[in-house]
Length: 284
Image (cartoon, rainbow, N blue to C red; front, side, top):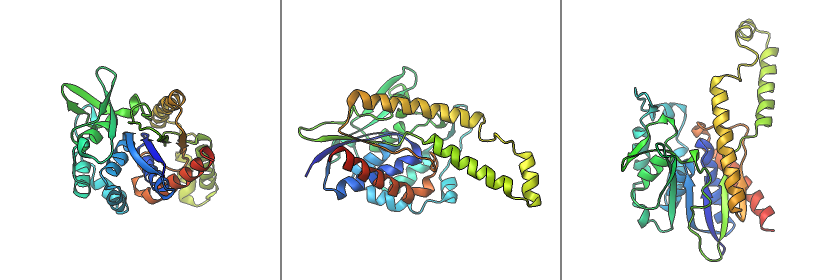
């Protein structure tokens, strides 16, 4: 049985694909002996290290758009939209909190010190405190304040923390990266949807098509979102070049976004398929 030091990237809901990666590694007889994660990767990795990933997966099957809305606790703050307390409390009912140093395998989560621009690595203390700091998407979640620091999403600095996972002699380093987007495929899907919309000659569609600009997909929200995604992606690629993992499972997506938490089973299946392909190519 081969030992694996596993690293899971940031990526919002796309990080649910990490569950499929873990399942495939175990199905092939690999033993995960240490784990590091960033943002959603920190959450998935932490629940796995706690031995409760199956419980989390079953809970995710119950998540639909309505339940997602119910779990959002909006804030009137100037620096964030969502407090983030309600979702954490809901997950604690499924996966109880535990101290990181009590986990059966070494684990760490990466966050970012907003004021000093420094990476903050959690290797001890509350698992949920580490996860909450690591997933603090800027402007969306309320930042975590700890020891005089303002902590935000680790993906800002190190979205694929290959340099932070604990290594053991003889293990193989495996990275699962969901930070990439297949923009060409996305453009084709958008074009197909646009053509289908334009071909609909019903009165309502004709009026709607007159009101919707042809370039509606190119707006300030998508511009900022893609700019952020491109920077995160570049950082993850640079880390992979610096550390050179034995296996890099690169999961670029065209259909799924950062908030598609109601599509967990499809994302998990995709992660498992990509892991199977990557392991076959890298270790043949």
